[in-house]
Amino acid sequence: MRSYNLRLLDEYGISNHRYRELKEFCLQYREKKEELGQIYTSSCVSAEVAVNGGLPGKPTEQKAMRATRLREELKIIDDTLKNACGDDVGVLAYLKKNVTEGIGYSQLGIVPCGQRMFYTYRRKFFFLLDKVKKG
Image 1: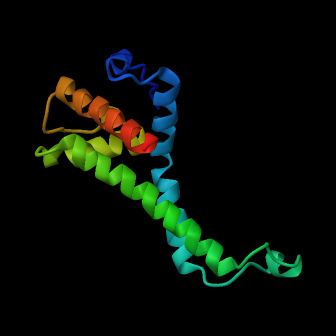
Image 2: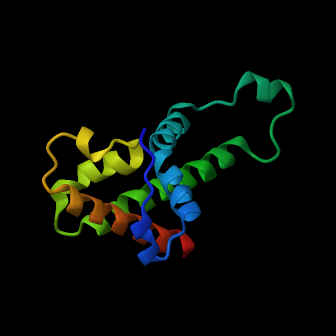
């Protein structure tokens, strides 16, 4: 996977370290989706937890809270992608693959916009994501 050094993010007020934090948050997208699916498909507590006296609190409540948190994080990424692309929804799927899977522009296939425009959308995405995550 290629590591991007986006000097242009400086104009958006995002440091290199903050950019890396946001990038890693997005790269966990698939893991979060898989974990959310596991929460919904598993209905019982593991034998190890039951033998050791269980976790503090209620397992069902903990799973529900974790599922809520995962859904919120996935929604943040999806909504920010939509906001960054605006009316150009054709580029949305490509931008999502780029930021959540680390697939570079040249490996995405036929993207419905040029490379310069694509990376403008990408910078806008990280700018908006930074604003959303800061609150």
